[in-house]
Amino acid sequence: MNTPDTPSRRRPMLKMMLQMRLPMALASIAAALLAIGIVPRLAASTALTKQADAQREPIVAVVAPRRAPGSQELLLPGSVMPYADASIYARTSGYIQHWYTDIGAKVKTGQTLADIETPELDAQLKQARADEAAAQANYDYAASTAKRWQTMLQTQSVSQQDAETKTSDMQAKRAALEAAQANVARLTELVSYEKVTAPFDGVITTRNVDVGALVTAGGSPGLAGNPGELFHIEQTDKLRIFVNVPQDDSAYVTAGTQVYLTTQQYPGRRFPATVARSADAIDPVSRTLRVEIDVDNRDGALMPGAYAQAHLALQTTRPALDLPVSALLFRPDGVTVAVVGSDGKVRLKQVTIGRDFGTYVEVADGVSEGDRVVDNPGDAIVEGEAVRVAAAKQS
Image (cartoon, rainbow, N blue to C red; front, side, top):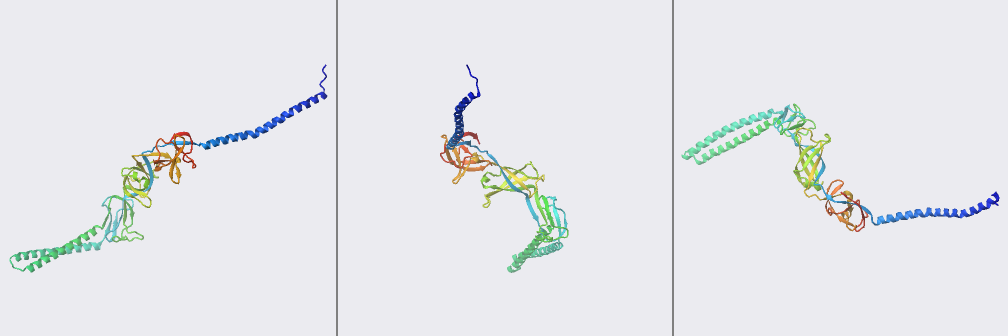
């Protein structure tokens, strides 16, 4: 017969169950605490092992050298200069009677720019011409006299000495005539300078004289602070641009090098030009080659004195290989690259740098097209180090 489940009977049973479960709970807590301490250590140990393996054989990316382009654009600054540039001075002294051209005027060769009034010079020319006429008359008389005396000498009518005296007098009169003629020619030339003319087709950029201004031959026109020139003329239908080519690129610049100009005034516009000549000598101070570029400017778009940029297309018949700049190692013994061999080990090779393409450089020697060159190598990379290639890409 079952007895009722009274509270007094349930208490021993609960106590017994608690005594049985307590060791199990303590064991679970101990296992959990043990797991919390061991699992991170295991994870750290695994990560450390992986890191050690990676450091033992670092993973590197490689690039393959490729053939460098045969043409490279070289951008250089330059100053636009007139093809011809001349300061016009007075060759005779006098007063400005009239001037015909002002700044900005386009003139032709031989066109009169100003007239100089020189009354004293005109009078000197008249006097010189009169002296020439007198010398001509004296010479004609002496020549006829010498001729008669030579005729009489043949009949022994006069002495040999008298005949030679007349001949000598004729020669003296001829020298005096030649001196008078030379003086007339000199003064005539000076009188021709009364008209100031343009030496070539161009544009007048400076006028330093006005009507009534006193000018002297080769001197100041009489205006305060004037350097002495009456006019300044520049030829602008054709312009020169001088650029300084670096020594490394000088061998590629020839008379046939293609070039065009750009300016800030005309965005997007290209001005075709040609390399006319070079100095054929490297400046020992700047280590550059002086090159002249000529450009057709008949439309007058470019102005002398402006700033321009010259784009030169440098051509080479034997392009070498190129590599990204990030593949270079700059060591004390020279520029070096790290090449991964077939055995997975690094070989350090010294290279010679050629042309500079910005993010790429031409390698004149030291590598071949089949090499696997490490890109972005670490500074600690050494000869014979074992590496693992992650992926190959074309440079």
